[in-house]
Length: 273
Image (cartoon, rainbow, N blue to C red; front, side):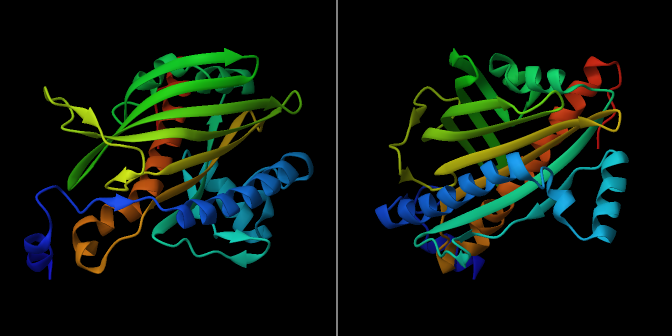
């Protein structure tokens, strides 16, 4: 089957995918519901995902976090209580948490908002980064992402991000991609961007939701990611299925791990999960 898929594949890595209107509309419905839930949880709780779990599981999760592990879980795709199918696309919804001992909420925010240095903090997944604009707690930033797993994918992304200080010990943030361009022939003389929505479909949308809480002698950092990618035709599943399905989880885990390591390094402790 793998040999057949390769023989039938086009000259490029995979057949190009098209971002359709119905795909965007379904994704937007998920985001609308997620925005409402995030705003509600920011004010009423549970502020951290673990605190909404059964007591036994919650206890285990906190033990893992205090050991320095990244706790991560898949979330459902729902709007108004009903599961949503995304035509011609795949929705990837994950939440992850880390605990960073000895670090304050202010230090976490300073690191996350330092977009000019994300290419160092989150290397090698972030190749380039730049703060485009800041107006109070609103940020616009550029990030170039690199992921390798059987194949190599590079994408240029533009982001809007909003931060909010909720109390002396709590803060939240949400961000969204406003433009995503896959990069072809990365690092070569003919490197160029593919048109928006007319690419291989490895990343069409990326929305993130952050909760940060300082307590227990450190700060808990939680990130929830909602990613939209292409659907995978049957013949291409052996080739790109593992890449498309594992990418959002691995990216979230890596981002939280880099955040923890960078902040611990600032305190002279470079240990990481």
